[in-house]
Amino acid sequence: MMAEHYRAALPDDRLTVVPNGLDTDRFRPAKVGERADLRRELGVPAEIPVVLFVEFFSRDKRPQLLYEAWTALREQHGVTTALVCVGVTESPYFEVDASLAALMRADARARGVEHLLRFTGEVKDVERYYRGADVFVMPSIREAFGMALVEAMASGVPVIATRIPGVTDDIVSDGSTGLLVPPDDAAALAEAVRTLVSGSTASMTAAARASVVSRYGLPVFRAQWASIYDALVQP
Image (cartoon, rainbow, N blue to C red; front, side, top):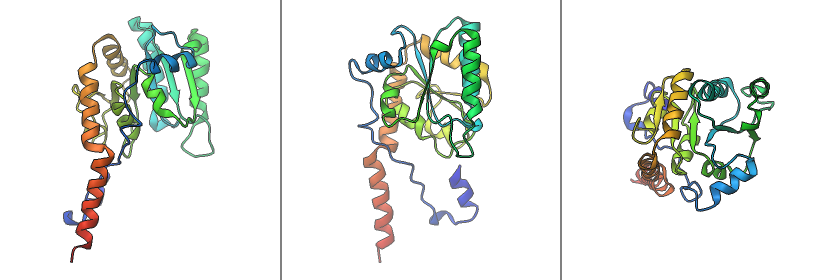
């Protein structure tokens, strides 16, 4: 999407798109015992699937939409999951809206599901949270790239994202490496989560990780930048 804006001002031969690179050794599928270890730390029973959100809390990131879908999943579909939210919920940064997490906590308490809702705040080891999850969800309506989505795919977690043209639909092949849903559609989001927690996702997660390694892995990233610099210094 950003490239299209640049193309409006620059000739095509002056623009080269290089996606962010990812350390796919750091962001990898869980080894034996890692998933269970994190779930014990979070106090989530082994039999309850974990839905993961990794973003700072802004309205454009739509944590409240995911919360709505999460409650509908339990109350309308009879599927109980835990919702783990990783990221800053309060900050002087203008995009962070502290009321979002507060409203979610209060509503979960009223519904009697507060024990299934976790807020970790900012963490330094986010890769561990991907390994403990059963589904990752990015419900944003605006993203420059969607790094958390790529991290989750590399970590072997089935992913769901809002379709953002030129961003998430470039990262995720719908139905193959993850699921894409319309923006601001809590019902579609709940159905997508239900689909992934109730079915086999092994082929999807394998395809997702392979896609990330081949497109965003550090060796690919380095080669792309080396090619650009080589072209610039050629006489």
